[in-house]
Amino acid sequence: MILNIIYAFLTVSVLGTLFGFGLAFASKKLAIKKDERVLAVEDALPSANCGACGFAGCAAYADAIVNAAADITLCAPGGATTQVAIAEIMGLEATGGDSVKMVARVHCFGNDETSKKDFSYDGILDCNAAAILFQGDKSCKYGCLALGSCITVCPVDAITKGEDGRINVDKEVCIGCEKCVTVCPTGVMKMIPYDADYFIACNSNDKGAAVKRACTVGCIGCKICERKFPEAGYTVKNFLSEIDYTIEPEGRDKAAEACPTSCIRIAD
Amino acid sequence: MSYIAIVITFVFINNFILTQFLGLCPFIGVSKNTESAIGMGFAVTFVMAIASVVTWLVYYYVLIPLGLTYLQTITFILVIASLVQLVEMIVQKISPPLYKALGIFLPLITTNCAVLGIALINVTNSYGLLESFVAGISAGLGFLLAIVLMANIRERLDLEDVPKPLQGVPVAFISGGLMALAFMAFDKALLTNLLG
Image (cartoon, rainbow over all chains, first blue to last red; front, side, top):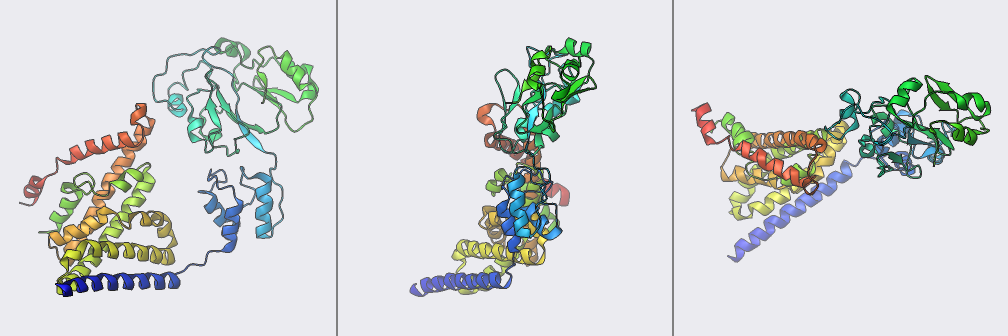
């Protein structure tokens, strides 16, 4: 009886010790030297794993920078600070790259009150699903479908849907990964500089009359902003005004007041 | 028992997840998208196959000669846990791509009940070494089948308008239950009809 217990005890202890030493030996023998620079670069990256750089995550990007000489300017959330940190680790010059911080914004101000619908959509609550059906339920085929595919895809929860049915991006939270821009079927989600003062809250390339039929807050391409305020950086292309953010604007606020459909809105 | 019968038994009739309800933790945890479900499925298959062989060796060459068969459960856990760790290290060393595909799932299954289950079932059915190996692979493939089906269902469920209290894991369990009902169609009669 006692012998049995001793046997059992011994067997399990011997097996356990054997496996323990085996594993310890194996971990020494099979240890893989990780490149210290990869770890350092990984630390410098924001760890948001958003995929904006085109790699599978921050770890994969760090690996690519060190081992495949990937471009160090690809991290949108990290911006200039990350770039400088990586450049230091890798012994490279920080080229600056695209150092203006960009944030996403919905270029549409239409909701159920302002915009007409062609039909009542009762399908899967997903913009891309809705867009398959006659490009969405809205009469305007350029506007925001407001079903929130961008909300789902946003890695930092910067996008919310307000009670007025409009999709808002919190620019303080937005890391500029452009995932929402990619997922948006109508292309109404566009990137603007973080410190942009105004933006055009419309994405419609329809002629003025067609825009007016579909929506009360769309850009009708009247060119008042372009003609009357030539210093403010507005250009109207395809019946849609665009703002040039690279110049020093003059009178951009006055143009916003003059806009007949007030679709030049403050980017707050 | 022929090898074909073992394969059919463990993939369909005694499917580890849908009939024996073993290994539900990774089944629910890693079935959110098909890609990781496939990775998990193959990792489990791999570990089950190796664990079947090693536990068979330990059982017949250590436990039986010493008359300590009642220690099988604790010994098997010990063997499987160390084995998975070792396999993880070896795979990381010799094949980084395979490690990337399977590696993150391996630690999750060190003490998985499905892996322990196949070791104990092999002993209970007194399978030979090769039979144990085939049973291990088949059980793993059964797991792969169930988890990939589940991942596909869950990907579609994500797009559906599920009532709030049921969203996520609850509706996954309900779907799993319905799948288990469907798998009840596979029973021993299938075996006799197919193989006589």
